[in-house]
Length: 188
Image (cartoon, rainbow, N blue to C red; front, side, top):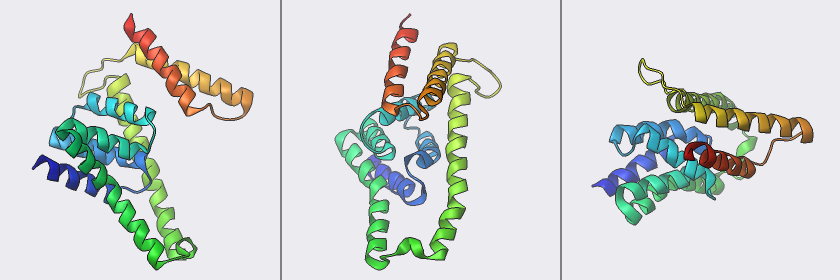
């Protein structure tokens, strides 16, 4: 039963979320919390690991959550569920419409969806920021000072690199710096 639920849940996420892995985060969070598969903190940890491992965020996240719930079969079915809708849609588009993006209706559709995707990503980021770093849960506030310090350091590094080199720092370098800072800050 859990295998079917994993597949259907991630199939729905893959079919209904537009804009890639980050836009799927609100839906993944909602579904995982609804099913009681993970806590808010565990979701955040899975997102961090998914982001720092090779591959698409949504695929990695589905694989980790599926593995948590039902081992290797769960990982396979959750991953298949999240990628199958996109695969089928792209296959249909490639077969039916060679110049798909040239249609005004398609351009209008995508122009309308973009603001929603941005809002979903920002909303999820804000929710995770408030619950994880500021500790806002219901009416209480329990800020994670070490996490906020790491965030501030990363922001300053990003700002300095952007100012000096004129481009954003490498995400890989930033992830490595944050991992080292996490080890240093949370070990003591």
